[in-house]
Length: 183
Image: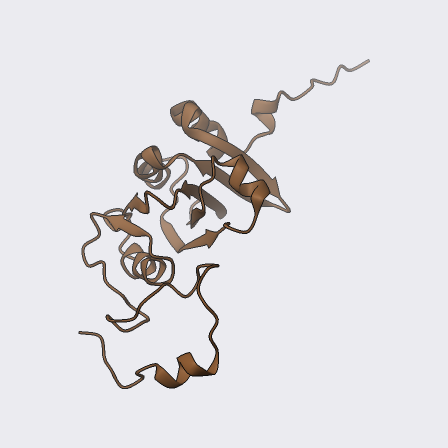
């Protein structure tokens, strides 16, 4: 007669979640694993430290920053209430070549405080990815080496991926200066 040992919730969680919770337990707002896509939602004040830990931990080694983007949740009341009415969510996609593992890290950002630490000191790829997010959503990345528009002209007004961006259609396209180059 063999006895089967039941796994505790800690043993069922991926290693990255266990390590992150050991170091940043009070800053982790949510962990989800939907369809094999692991996501950790953390507070903004610890994001740089957490990302540095994920990159430099010998066991985790998330050495590749795949993407940085944002989501505007202004029209989704359920998400707004869940994260204290933070309108935006900055989203980082990481990959560990050593462990062949992907990780999504999300950070709620309030509209009144559109600042978040830059990850350019950790991953060089963050430079252009953060510039794109700044350009499209208006989120400022503190301590970024060269934070300026990358897709739209310098004098362009607005941030096209925000939900409140006006869709004016033809008139806007006709008045857009395609010849102007960014400095």
